[in-house]
Length: 235
Figure (tube, rainbow, N blue to C red):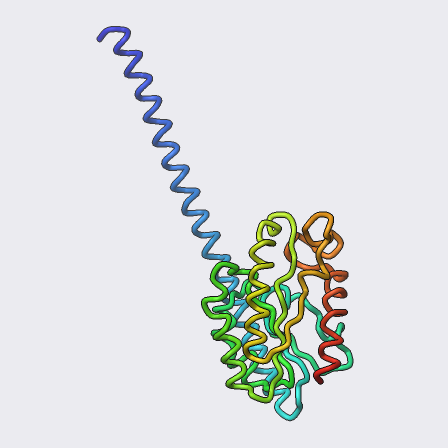
C-alpha cells in the first residue's frame, strides 16, 4: 500500500471515529435532554394536580361562605398574594403557573363553578398568545352560563420586556379583542397593559418585572390599584 493511500486511510479512520463519537455524544445528550424534559413535565403535572386538590379542599371549606372574588389565571395570578392585596374581601387564588387558556378551560369546574364566587377575575393567555382566541370566548361563555349570578372581570394581558417584549404588539392586539368580548358578554374589562408600560421604552417598567414577563411586588401594587376600584364598585 502506498504512503498516500495509508495517509488517506488514516484520515478517513479519524473522521469515522469523530463521527461515531459525535453520534454517541448526541445520543447521550438526546437521552439526557429527553429525561430532563420528562422530569419537568412530571413536575408540572404533579404541581398542577396538587393545586387542583387544594382547590377541592377549599371549595369544601368555603361551602358555607360566600366568596367575594376568585382570581383565575396562570403564573401571574399564581404569584399574586391576593389575600394580602385585598384584605377587605374574601378572596381566593385560582392561578396555576404555565396554564394556557385550554388548561384553564379544563379546570373551570373545580376552579370556579363549584366555588360560586360573587366575582371572577380572569387573566389568561400569556402562555398561548397565538391560539388563545381558539377558546377564550368559550371560557367567557362557559362562566356566564354556569355562574349567571357571578360578575366576570376580564383583565388585559400585561406589557412585557426582554425576551417577552417581542410579544407586546400581539398582546396589545389581543387586548383589543378581549375588550370586544367583554362588551359582547356584559363583562367588565380592565386594562393592565397601559399602567405597567414605560412609554419611553415601549416596554414594562424595569421595577415592575422580575424577568420581563412576571411581576415584582411593585408591579402587583400597580395592578391592584387598578383592579381595586372596579371590585369596590361591583361588590
